[in-house]
Image (cartoon, rainbow, N blue to C red; front, side, top):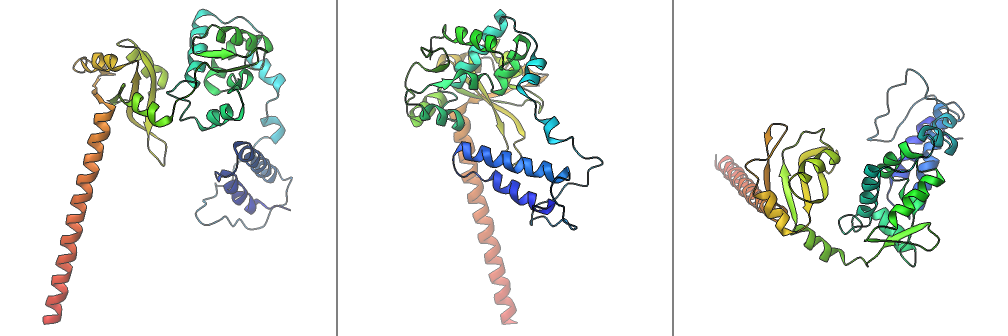
Amino acid sequence: GISVSDWPRVLRKCGERTGTPTQRQKMFCVGSFLAAAAWEGRLPKSRTYAPLPGFLPPAAPARRPPPLSSRLMSVAALNAVAGAFKPLDADAKVKVKTQIEFYFSDSNLPRDKFLRETVEADPDGFVDIALLVSFSRVRTLLVAFGGPQNDETVADVTALLETSETLTVSDDKKRVRRSTELRPRDEVDAEIELRSVYASPFPMTATIDELTTFFAAHTKVLSIRLRRHITSKDFKGSIFVELEDGAGCAELLGKVKELEYEGAALTLMMKKDYLEKKKTERVEKAASNAVAVAAAEEAAAAAAAAARGS
């Protein structure tokens, strides 16, 4: 049997980034099932709770979570939430098409490990449209039109993607791919850096959609990336804005004195200049720390010598 005290170890193993994406997904599902089953009393409990070092168990819940079966929404339930099918309106068409084109773009695909591996797993680079419409942002857009589980909704999206200039739909109308080969990441990253701008400050509650709307009023925006802390993943309040070209960057930087977001004047600079500035600051800080350490060691040595002399 598996006791309650064992499931933190199981979940930790599930979090290890080893094996293929499919293997990791299976590990996560198994670990989640065991955890839920333990709390629901369907697995034996140990008398003492002995988590692994460094794992802080949650306080005893006031009530048990609902049974596992009630937390797993069925396809039928998803369709019920989404409602009956209706054709995408003009606004939804623009947003859905733009979002799926973004998934395959130079801005996203080289950095999207899951999607890139999915593309590479197919000899012709195709990805199932049914998979793409299940992605969070597209799924949210489709809920009002029948949802991603609705065959008519998926067919509507497929017809929409056939109008794309950057994507190619397969002959069976079930898959889609980039129309051009993906270039080496180093080459793509260097090109993107030359048309990207650093901007701050923004409130912690700002969303990508809100920021895109704000900057799109001034120039054409290809993507926005929220900068996050490495450990906590909290938004830093600064972003990188990828524009269409260098001219777009110059246009945006020319408005730096007039740009405000929720009353705060914005700081703007080219991404490459910002990265160079931060690199210089790190080098200077390291040098300053080295000087401080050397001075402390010299003072300690002098004190030790004086103590020996006395």
